[in-house]
Length: 167
Image (cartoon, rainbow, N blue to C red; front, side):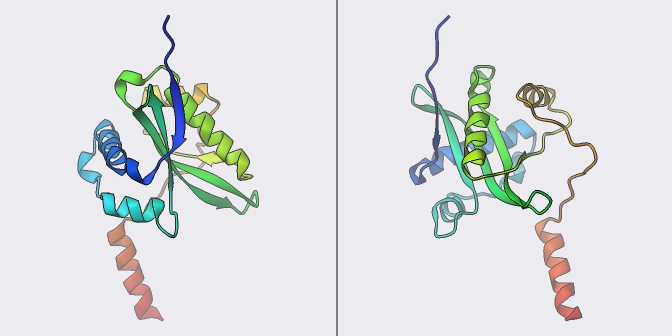
C-alpha cells in the first residue's frame, strides 16, 4: 500500500483563485452552484484584510490543494468561552477516504485548543449520509434539540428598515 503525503496549512492570499475553485466545487457537491456570490476581491478583504472575518485551512496532497475547511470564531455565553463555527469542509472526490478530511478536522481541533475554545459547531445536510458517518466516526454528535434558523440578506434589510421607523 502506498502512502500519500498530506499536509494541512493556513491559506495565503495567493491561494484565493484555488479557494474560489474549491468554493464552486463545494457548492456543486451541495447541489446549489447558483448560491455562490463570493468574489476574489471580497475573499481578499474578508480573509486577509485589516479585520479577518473568517479563516481557511487547506489540505494538500503532494503539494496540490485537494480540500479546505473554512471557519470563524463564535462565543458561548453558557460556557463563557469562544468556539469555532466550521462553515465548510470539502475534499475533492478522488481524495476522500484517505484521511484528508480527518486531518482537516484534527487541525481545527488543534486551533480550537490553542484558542481556548469550548466547542466546534457545524451543520451537515440530512441527505449527506457519508458526511454524517464521517462526523460520527471522528466523535461529532448530532444536537437534535436545536434547529438552524436563518435571516437572509433580504430579510435583514426588511427588518432593519422597520427598526429604523420604530426608533
